[in-house]
Amino acid sequence: MSTERVALPGLVDPHVHLREPGATQKEDFETGSMAAIAGGFTTVFDMPNNPEPTVSPDALKKKITLTENRIYCDIGFHFGATASGTEYFEKVKDQVFGLKVYMNHTTGTLLMEDSNELQSVFSNWPKEKPIIVHAEGQTLETAINLTRLSERRLHVAHLATGEDLEMVRRAKEEGQPVTCEVTPHHLFLTQVDVDELGPFGIMKPSLKTERDRLALWKGLDMGVIDMIATDHAPHTKEEKSTKKPPFGVPGLETSLPLMLTAVAEGKLTLDRLVELTSSNPRRIFYLSMESETYTEVDLKESYLISSSNLKTKCGWTPFDGRRVTGKVVKVVLRGETVFDGENIIGLPNGKVVYSAE
Ligand code: NCD
Ligand code: ZN
Ligand code: ZN
Image 1: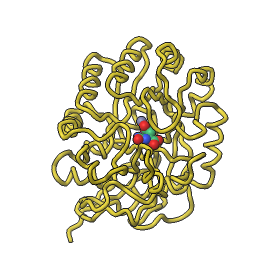
Image 2 (image 1 turned 90 degrees about the vertical axis):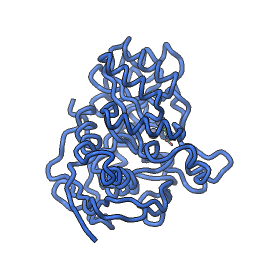
Image 3 (image 1 turned 135 degrees about the vertical axis):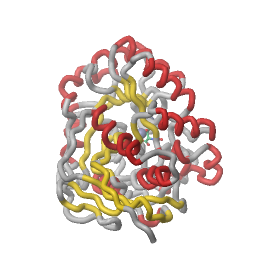
């Protein structure tokens, strides 16, 4: 079997749901950070839509405290927007990478729909830090208009359709400070896959058409898309098997191998992949580089993704059985090997990271 090992610099996943506190039957900081490391990521940014949402300095402090001596990768946080939370913005801004605004219905209770409240949230958030939106279609248009009015920075989470991509492309062309991310599931799956996956293929935004999927690849190629984000959103198999399955799929351990497969197939260059998973998220969210922190991958090694050997607590993946080319063989965090391609090694030496802005 041929091998070709290369080291990639400190990979970042800017959008994960590690579920602690409040939903640790799905995931917790230990298992979630192990999944990140096994997936090749040395830093992840955790989202605020917990059952007890991260919308106050106390809730944020609680999360930070819960990570102590328990995380295997570095973790940063995003703050959740609520109408009454604007008074906290100054206080928390140095502790988080961005403000998350939920403009469409999804997991959790953080939906914001009132336009006055949205305007107040946008105009109270500090200018230099991104406002991250869950916004699809019409609400994305609203978000871009709010960005224009408030002169804030916008980062569009999990962009999924050709139309939304076109909106972002136009905003960028206009000179608006807008950036965006796509998920591997929207790059590799379509609504056709839901037939087979059932509830395990249900997430927000939903899987789209083949045309949308191809548009996203074109967006990657043209440089409209700034980063890959897994939107790692684990739920238990039991929860997924109920009549009303919750939205979301895990992604930390499958993202890099899937993207490396695209590299092997000539769909994108390795340099572009590093831009999408390290340099761009670092630049856009002001995350500095740790010394001696890298992920070694074998570009030639081919294997089958399997639900049976994952570190994520939920223990399943919508990519079960898929052949990939490109494997994480070693992860080094601040000079220490923390993953050997199979096992997590050593103590949980991750730390909470803060934006350098
Ligand atoms: C996410 C979750 O479960 O927290 N679900 C999802 O389907 N993506 C929430 C979100 O990112 O919208
Ligand atoms: Zn979302
Ligand atoms: Zn999410």
